Amino acid sequence: MSDKDSRKAKFDWKEIDKRVMIPGSVCLLLVVLIGAVFPTRSETALTAAVAWIMDHFKWMYIIFIVGVTIFSLWLVFSKTGDVKLGGKKAKPSFSMLTWITLSLTGTIAVGICFYGVSGPVNTFMNMPKFLEVQGFKSGTPQAVVPTLEYCFLHYGIPSYFLMVFFGLAIAILYYNGKKDLHGSSTLYPLLGEKTKGIIGQLVNIMMIVCLIVCGTNMGLAVIQLNSGIGTVAGMSHTPNFLMALIIFYTVATVIFATSGAHKLMGKLSNINAVCYVIILVFILFATNFNRTFELLFTSVGRFVMDFVPMVTFGDPVYQTGWQNSNSMFYFAWNFVPAMMQCLFYVSISYGRTLRQFIVVNCLVPCIVVFTWYSAFGGNAMFGILNGSNLWVQMQKFGAGISTFAFLGTLPLGNVMKWFFLIVAIMTFITFSDSVAYSFPMLFLKDTEADPSLTKQPKILNAAIAIFMGVLTAVLLFVGGYDALNMVVVVLGFPACVIQIFVLISIVKFLRNREKYDITYQEEMKEKEAARKEEIRAIEREELEKQAASPEG
Image 1 (cartoon, rainbow, N blue to C red):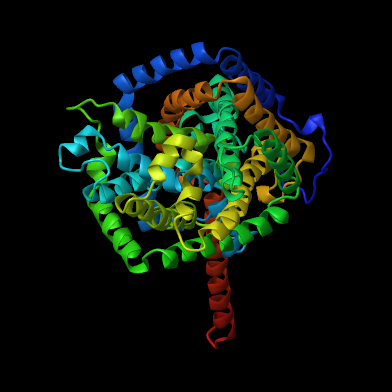
Image 2 (image 1 turned 60 degrees about the horizontal axis):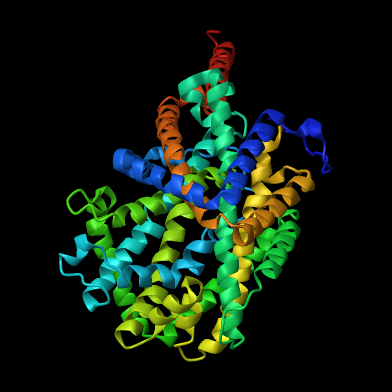
């Protein structure tokens, strides 16, 4: 790791860690090609693999989820949360507001834009058997609150804890342990220098393969935007602007990602956050403000009470399969993006405490998610109960139409459709920007003490952005989108295994800071030197007093 004041922005192969980049890129391309060339066979094999994982290792998912949740809450409420990334003298390079907006808009793109209405409505109209036997029938008033509870579980807590944990682990080892900005560094307290061997290499390769998540997320983005354009334009059918949207999306990502987080990316995130507030306020006043917050507080209260039973539930009695294809599916989807987007969390967190890391990257987004799902999803469900044809439109035109169809039921909804379309575009761009900007840091041999100040070769940022665009086009037009979705779920298994060991490793690091935390060691040396200097000063003062006294 280097503390140089500047780095050349032009591409130089000498700056690239080929041991990480080449094998990881080859594995990533192989996974994509197999899924695209043999989509049907791949999907069949992957479906069988997912079923096998759920039959044998669901317990492991539950243990890890519970472990990460306890660990995250421990950091929030214990003195360990006061540990500062980079040491006590580290100064943040972003204001608190910019840090919040970068984190918020760079991570919640698909979660609230695509699933804000479709997620709750799909659950509301397809309640699992284990809830129906308790009286929560699909499409009935009794199903509204349980639906939001599961949305909070799938898109809020513990999902955000899972999403940011790996980034926190890298941040601790990079900033405080002074290790490389690689996923392998997270295992140093367990393996020592062996992290530079085959095990560490496999972890780094896994991180690169996880980049396929961007193809599936961008696929969802362009599907929704394509549906949105057709809706706001008043078309009677869904248009086919997918390729144009992919090209626009890719070009915009290249422009913003190469500008760096301190320039266009930061400004776009701030603007995007303001737009979210405007949309949310509109929904609150266009529906029933009081009823929405009553639903929010009721659902959050029930969620808190039911959290432990929900997060540990494995559907052992009815074996409906719903939990496998919903809760476990979403948890797996968080294991994998966690290893892909971790460097973004690391790059903007220098100088912040562990407690701030959890609050800003987990709890603040969860507050937004809970409010958003109650306002959008809750009122969409109320609309269906009152005779809305939203569910019919979703079945006819797909989930991508859901948010626009919901807005169409509100006063000034047609105007807000255009506004939401623009915000959705900005949101999806900020998500892909965050990846294209931060992910190339994994390939660099040297980075600044504060990675956000590292001047990366812009060709790497552009290459990641273009790869994501090409991958999306291949998946949507050549085939393999469903297969690659299943790849993500299957990758959730090794990602979970890796992160269980990372969790053990980080706990060991924090419990033995005097051994692993270089910044802590430096602070202790400074304190010891200051203490010795204070003792010497007292001794000198005593000697001076003795020399000045008559007896002296």
